[in-house]
Length: 286
Image (cartoon, rainbow, N blue to C red; front, side, top):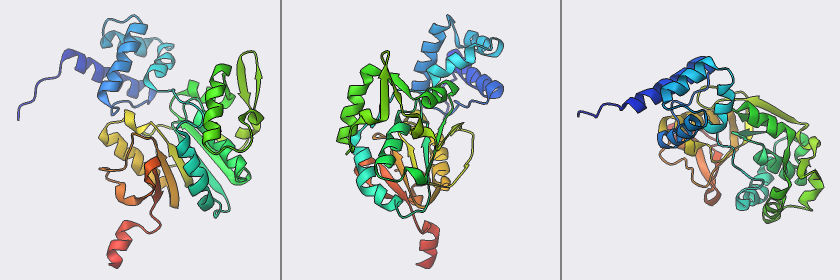
């Protein structure tokens, strides 16, 4: 079958992504194309570039462009206890299993500005598991990681956070965990005293520890099928047997090459459990 040749713009976009990878080791080459193009178009206009080739020149020759470009290429929109039913399911159905481990490692993959992390840290504190838990918060955007470390959010977002916390089965008041001043809320620094913030790229980096819970929600939707499979493979290899994986409401393990490594646990909230016995062993025994 003869395929249509790439347009000049498609070639320029490919070369721009290759330049970012080769110069800065940020790999966006297998991100979902249409979403990536829209973000690149916004970045191109922001930097006053007529073409992706002009933007590539800026990326390669102006050191200040790449950090700003990351703000366009990574999605930082979230909120605390987003989709409260997910956190309620963690609290009621996953936490009882987490209690059976003497120590816990929790990975928030694609932590953005930290809202998901603080939600999980508060939840596990309320459930008495904080002292045995180490959190790993990873993202490819250094600026986002710094915001996550700071734990400071606009005060006008707090009512929404509070409603979500209550709907997620929160114990006590969310105000117990932050101080408010000058239009901002600063979350208790003790929530992150057992936390590692680190650069990690799901497109190119490897497994770095064994986890009991991985929460990576609304990250896979920005990847193409090949990169989704890579990320899910990483998650599978990173989870202890019987560990849990939480995905976003529009994400699925269906059609993945790694789907056999997981079983549905709370399917309506996209919570999966790594099989205790590998599928290959089960088949061999049969």
